[in-house]
Amino acid sequence: MQAMSETVYNSVREHRQKKAITQEEVAEAVGVTRQTIIAIEKGNYVPSVLLALKLAEHFKLPVEKLFSYHD
Image (tube, rainbow, N blue to C red; front, side, top):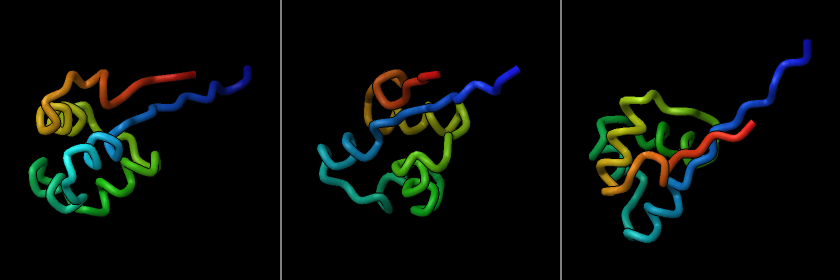
């Protein structure tokens, strides 16, 4: 059986840039490091459900506006 390629996409960078805030500001607001925000923005790290919800709350968006799943 072939493994499925599963990907979670995010628009954190786009929403952060629209608000003209830094990665550091987002990180501080949700309680993680700037490196974590960098990794999320690059698609190298899929956040926990809790962190995804915190990010959505920070940007005042539904979580589905920040993160989407594609296989």
